[in-house]
Length: 88
Image (cartoon, rainbow, N blue to C red; front, side, top):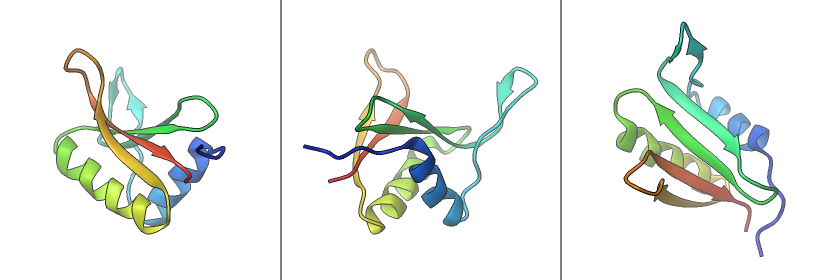
């Protein structure tokens, strides 16, 4: 079973890796990554802006390199792509 994880821990890894977080400005998201807590044992990572697939692949490699378990997913009904991040 996966261990407890916090969105701020995943955010810290991506920020340390030189990635920029997205920001909500004037009713729209500026390009970058965004983390969202999904229960106690999972964090979702999204990319806002162009190049979504490429950026998610890059985030996935960065997070796996530091020991997180990462699974690429897509929201139901053809929604947004995202990464499910857990601690093994």
